[in-house]
Length: 413
Image 1 (cartoon, rainbow, N blue to C red):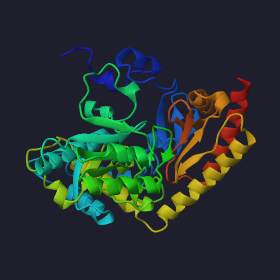
Image 2: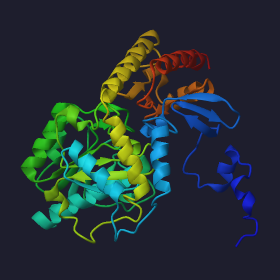
Image 3: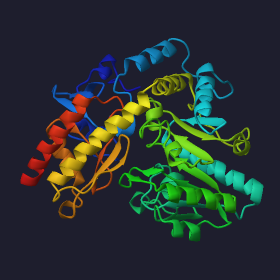
Image 4: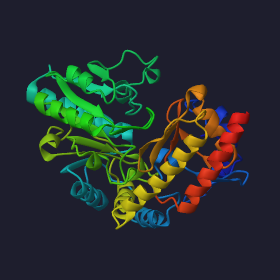
């Protein structure tokens, strides 16, 4: 035991430099270190205030330190934390019931992240195809510029080679096709395909909404070939687009749906939802996870679903999204040399950089952050906005003011 690990370990002074000294360098975080937050308000170590339009990459959708969620979690913390998977618990049964009642699904599997939810979905699809049709039906089709997680399987299925370089050999029988391209889908989805996985709205790929006709074509092709259609709603789901999941607005129902991020509002949880007929192929012992569906995560997830199901909640998300979109359209119109036309659904919005400023989305968001507005990027060419779903009109107006101030500083830099 290291003698230095005394009672002072919890109060030792740390700074942004500490990250570079003790953490594996998989990220390049901002210079400021947030220490406190409430709603959409964040304060750093120096006491500086920021308006958060990132919600932790579409995670804290009910706001930071939400008091209702904190109360629910605190009660469960004092009741039951964890059980091995030889037992079930009441919160996970309630959460599974709530999600299946609210969706097409009849069965739920819980894990700890979006990557794990997609891993489970892809494993289930392969197991289903292998058992029902034979080992020849194993190919998985996904889209270029997609993102499905960072496990070796899911990062390989994601259509961004920059994330797989150096990790070869990669899992086999994976193909990538252009997003929203029906003819490419027809050519790729043949009888040897086990699953097609797609984001109804590409998030990391630039905030690009799926064309309903394209998604319907994928549904039809899967029906024709016996493949399973998987919708990755890790980012687009849980109210982000003004409905619990985006598939209901698209008018296309998948065989498997994955969720995470906002499902726990910052408490790690992921879910895979499917039908009873498909779920039976993951029989006892074929898949599992130690922490998935534990009482703490399930309690938070259930409260999130409950709060998002209240009357008027989704209507307000759409209203707030329309207000932000209108502001961004005006911003783009006023500064056409900097920004292209905004796109997205609900409160998942992308603002492309114009040709003159391609590759500089991060430069713009850094300037905005210095002015007190936290924004995201969706690749080097798109600024992404994903504020908490409880964003107020006053906060929308303040974000608009700060974005305009940031543009002036960006142009002058």
